[in-house]
Length: 488
Image 1 (cartoon, rainbow, N blue to C red):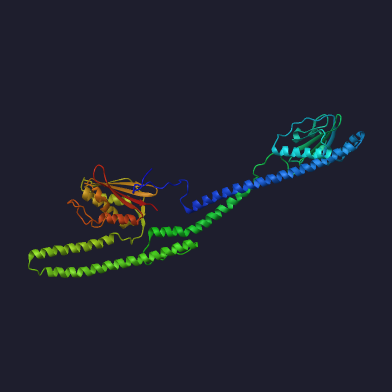
Image 2 (cartoon, rainbow, N blue to C red):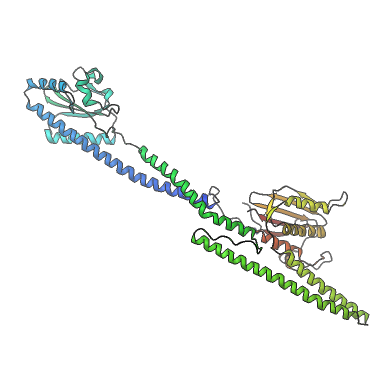
């Protein structure tokens, strides 16, 4: 696993999780809706199936009661009148049952067994035995209309006149299952009763999620998601403006403050940002005035002291005092320059970092001798151009000054720009690395000249861009400086 500049492992993240607030809220909303819909659909389907089974059982119970009444009616007729009544029923048409008397029980291919079918058949058998007696010989089953057989000759349904059976046994185009009840009413005489399941109970199989439920979920998501996306985008727009303003941090007095809009929390954050910006403006203004005053106040006594030193007759004393005055003046200039170089009073804009580094390399080139080598390419980086130029210039200058040769390597990643600067100098003792960024810190070596401000200024500029500057000794000798800048 890669490590950051501090040597620590980065926190684990879910790569599939969107980085934007809009994407995360929409994803979480989708997951919440999916869970809610699954739970509600399971409960709804369970209730729906229970209602369907209850309605189916009630309907078949009524059919069973009507069938038992028909059986009782035929049992009450003299045997010679039964066929006359059957002929009259066929001529009338439109009866609930198709009724016939057969010499045997007809064998037909029944529908496959399902939980609903067993439930309904048991209910019909229970009603018939309760109404007609437990000793009755009967057979109840459900048959597809295409497999239905009628009369002793076992004719199919389509072979009969429509007035005979189609009114009772078909509900085109649904063609529901047909309940066939065969009861032995006498020796070699079976009463045949057939009736189609009435709508809406046209199936004995366990149904899945109804189509209207799926359509409802699709329509709800199709309406809710665009509305939710628009609402979240409207709420996060002030956050995006706040993030841009925080990144750029405009400190000009003529720049208007951010408009306070959005939710109460966003308004509070925006108001705090505007307050912080005003305080920074006041702090920078006060600091500039302070350093101008210090510079002005110190130049006058230094000039006066120079004039007085010239009046001293003792030449060795005069030379020592002049050296002290030069050192004092140089310290004042360095302090002012340090303040100027680390000043963040600059707007951000796209910066050609690669072109900037290659320009520095050309400046250090003398004939065929190249003291700065640049490798790699990068896109434009959004930052403060003058500050970045000071930062990179200090790093390259230090590498050339103390290591003779600067090798610059550019790594452009998706969210970060990394610049490596290596030299071939003596390096820095390990116990001194922690102090290398301190102002005015210099190693006790004749090779280390200067005022010790360059690396500190470079690190301050990197931190002002949200990045970091790390330094380490190379195993083969020299220093390795890594500038890491985040891409916003």
